[in-house]
Image 1 (cartoon, rainbow, N blue to C red):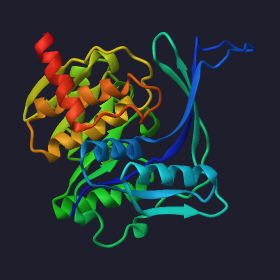
Image 2 (image 1 turned 60 degrees about the horizontal axis):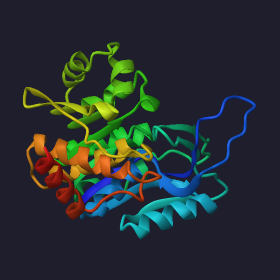
Image 3 (image 1 turned 90 degrees about the vertical axis):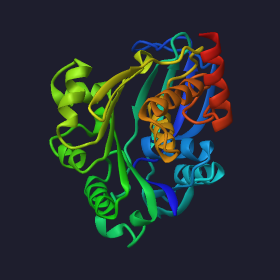
Length: 304
């Protein structure tokens, strides 16, 4: 049995650290740069693999240079790619990311992919049913909805990463068949119409998920589970780059659920993994192992 199957975005990020984000008609020199795979679901699977879970990616990229780089990097981290299709004469998704040196915050310029979306019929029979968890990010919407319905029938737990890019009227259908919803604060505000996370989390929970969490960057996360709401603060670290922090949080959160931990411990662990990632440039090269994360949490508790 596979721990986690992920159906969603996989891309290639070109990341440059700059002394400041330039204005129009300005020029700035890169201080550091890197190329790394990206994408919400794909990066979450990488985090899970780094922590020790078995993962498989389901999706498509182009049969181009970026597509082959995406595939090779997933394999290098131990993510299964047997269900990663490479579509001929199509362009993979490539993003350009500028990271501000002082704050670690970034500006993303996302490209356009010409790769076709998955259809429900593209998902092999028995694949979803072979996993313990299904992780989605709202892309390939029709296939994601079909996969979530199959997961529910099979008793497979579905986790949805909800970000502003997938906030549309149809997303509610997917939330309704989601067991665990982890939304960005931007999504929660746009979807619910309120900037009060406490009200937004209650609104989203009414749609169907058993657990709802809202990630709020350096303000930590808010979670509603078993009728109880609690806040988990963010860990304080020297921030180099916040790229991928939310994706990594999702992967680490799923890892905690795989371990059977309480939601409170799971949220703290996910916060620690995301914090450690932020100490490095790019969304993946700073993802810690399980042992590194546990040592970090222990040190923070001792310091506290």
